[in-house]
Length: 189
Image (cartoon, rainbow, N blue to C red; front, side):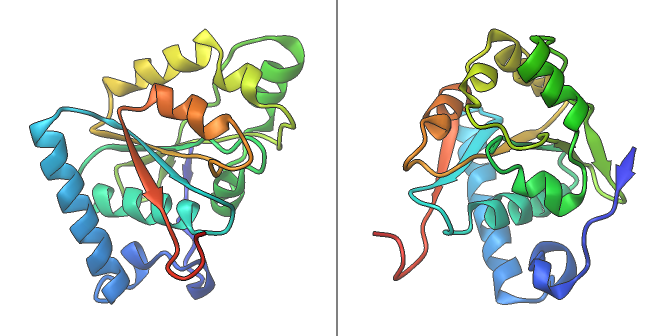
């Protein structure tokens, strides 16, 4: 099923709603540089993380995914932050049934992908927050599901938790082919 991209200005999705802004231009520059890097060293899976909480990694991964989709690239945005599933809640695409089955019953059924209205953008949603997501992220089934998706998309952007204090970003980095580290000027230690 399709979902709508939030249009509230407080959501700060400048790539979609403020295309003439400086932020949208910087995202286009980033998308262009990533595309150039992809042409030199073929890769599809890009992990977006930060050193600590609150540096804007989810905002960047979401806006970057929208920017790439606006270039008619098929993009899969993975909510890899199973501790908070903030991106899935932002888009209102939380898939509780799959992650609960994965965690509690050992049934490895990945969530159904959700498509954004009017864009070649899909979301691999997370479920309710999981206290110890390593059993999911480190599973063979999770890696296989990401690999299966690779054939259908030009880009797979993985939004992850911060590097500190969790091991999740390191686990996801092993599944990705490139890492984008988001830092916030004057905030990042």
